[in-house]
Image (cartoon, rainbow, N blue to C red; front, side, top):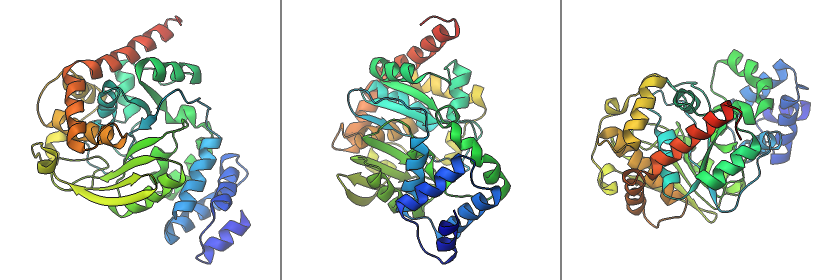
Length: 341
């Protein structure tokens, strides 16, 4: 790793291959804690480039538990976290609404890091297994149009850098890449990010990673989700071209709400919120999910406009299709726990 560290100390950028080589040393335990800390610190000080982020992501995915792609386009709608908003599980709930609209969603997620309750926490509370095998994940995507991929399970090599990240106590490149490391080949993606200044950069990274279409969002209030409290900032990637746009509640055809109205709680509280939304209850929680699921449907390429995506999201909830996707995962998890295939 000496060559990479010397380049970074000189203020130079690493190529994709150089970053992959350094990352391989991190994940195999061949780099010392001091080298790992220096690498992450120097990258953060210089500012990470699209090539450096893409190289790290490629290295992580090469070491992940392999999950074969299934027929048809697959998307994810995972966010980075880190916005400190204490909101309910917006993207997790939206994932079931997107799947209920007929789009295959490989939902990548983790336990709580900066928020009160992570996607894994709320799904586990509801009875969803966190350790589906690769084969079961493939079957779920084919049969149910949604599967949950628990980050620590599909990325066992990440344990090697956890101690260094905790010791540094400052945000690093790893705080940006969670949504990018899904082990399944994705064609489209909705990605939320807590840093508005990184929207364009993440669009460039997704293009390097082969996404045909994606929407990267930083919501009103600097959420890593879309918010109905004001103006949302987005970058749209479509066939290699990037476009910066904004979206207000009025433009989406939805009411405005304050951020305080979408605060969640512990796993029990957020599970109750999720079930109320999927069962059709009206209010700020539902409307926030309609916005995020609608943009997700638009990101998948299913609709030409966000408003059309929101209408499909409404149909997904009101028809019961979204709820049925969650119920299928719960029932499949119960069968696995009883040893029934």
